[in-house]
Amino acid sequence: MSDEWMEVYIPIRTCNLTFRQVMAEITRLQAENPDREVYMDGQLYAIVGRKRRVPA
Image 1 (cartoon, rainbow, N blue to C red):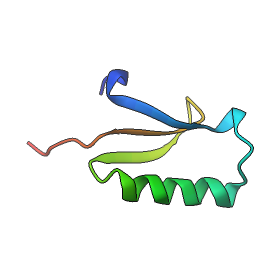
Image 2 (tube, rainbow, N blue to C red):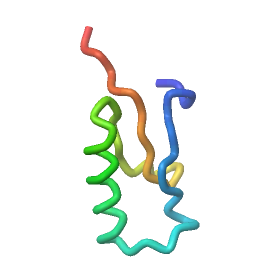
Image 3 (cartoon, rainbow, N blue to C red):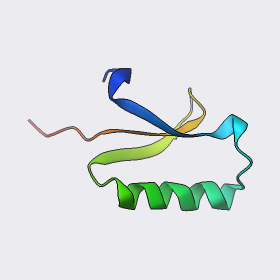
């Protein structure tokens, strides 16, 4: 999937959130964006969202 469909919500390296706060933010972002997959991207070290794939 192309990076143009990805949005960075929280750059983990530069934020001062605790692990618990990061997990709460992921839960909140998932609830607010049901059309997107929200997850921690290890390469970007950020919480990101991307459009959900429609099954073929």
